[in-house]
Image (tube, rainbow over all chains, first blue to last red; front, side):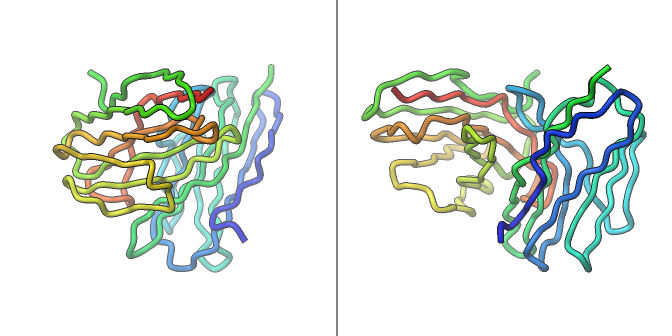
Length: 110
Length: 113
């Protein structure tokens, strides 16, 4: 089982749609969780951290389920500019080694 | 005012050559990283330095040698380049450790012919 798994997609959705991505992780000692966004031929950039209580930033909501070992990202009212690859990052406790998922590709069309 | 910069942005070279990629951050961060992103877009950590000291060294061939002259710089030297080294190499930094937000450089696209 891979350490961090994501559905690669692509998720092809119309503008205004709501879309959700999941990311599962195998190490129960994982401590920190993030979602990054990577545009084509660009570097990854932090989208949001994921807190135990869940957190929201505008149209984006991130949640953590420790019992089932997954994190999720919900995007409401999708915009064309949301088209990108969304990378899940899980950091192991103790070693603090960040592990990236392969990313989920989102395409928002008019 | 680039936070994390890398040079060169593009590197095309022949198999067997030796090349270096430079990285600098002006964020005052203590930790810097090198990642490799292959053709399948999988981003994998290679090395991490904290205040000039190596703290993460994943399974990477000995041909790859990082060097950190000070905490603002982390360079990557690659000996005897192979076709499989072709990838995008990203440098990143974070304030303290991997549990914090990482800021990435623009990447160096390496093509080995």
